[in-house]
Image (cartoon, rainbow, N blue to C red; front, side):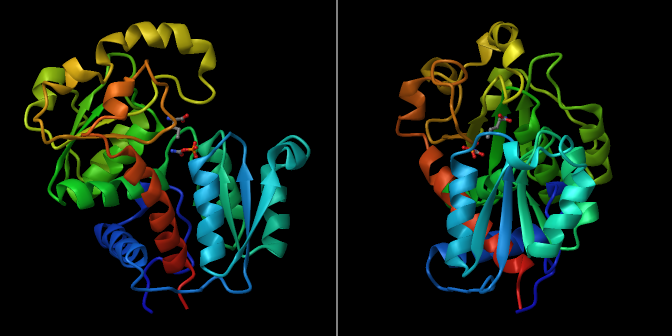
Length: 303
Ligand code: CP
Ligand code: NVA
């Protein structure tokens, strides 16, 4: 099978072309429907480094690797102590001698890049401070299934890792992404620079009511990401007007779908009635992590 992703790393959505993204989504749909059952990981061992907690990403990657015939090896953060017990580069060089690939959720994108630079085997991001590419690819599949390819997505909340990956995806695919982000919480300046290179003229933020008019998807994420716990109180105050609750949702069309990458801080960025309500597609979205990650690995390890 021809695959433009064969042997490549996936560290950022910004490294993918429109064709790459479409190939991943098409293959994910095929795998989800059971039309293909590839086993490109037969006899292969993939290491999984998680410096931060995870439910969806860890479990869906482990299942994906197993279903593709491979063997996932959890590598515990407290054991390898990346950059402390041993340099990040040395950890990568060693793991590269044993493994056929590495999936890593790290505090810092720079460490992920260092692992990729020092390992010949493919390295796939399971999220860092800067990005969450596999999440956004699963989100794109979910948007395609529920709202169609030309959907308008409104992202409400923090200009964080999830938001940055959405911005790159929108730039590459030419999607309409409306950002509702309080002043001071916009994505990092390098995100705007990279997005410009990808064809997005500017990162514009919208007032919430204008953004929600005619939107197909209302998307939110936590106000306080992992590692920002010290800022929790300030963030709760600064984001308080942007809670996705039934009053806010009434500004959007009744057909709009609600998405959240999860885990949710229920009662903060989103209320129970919305998260569990008829417009919510969050559990389909979470399921798609598995199908999309299988597609990514299947294309990276294509024969
Ligand atoms: N959405 C997501 O990445 O969830 P986990 O942190 O549980 O992996
Ligand atoms: N922005 C969140 C996403 C969790 C999946 C975080 O970084 O904690």
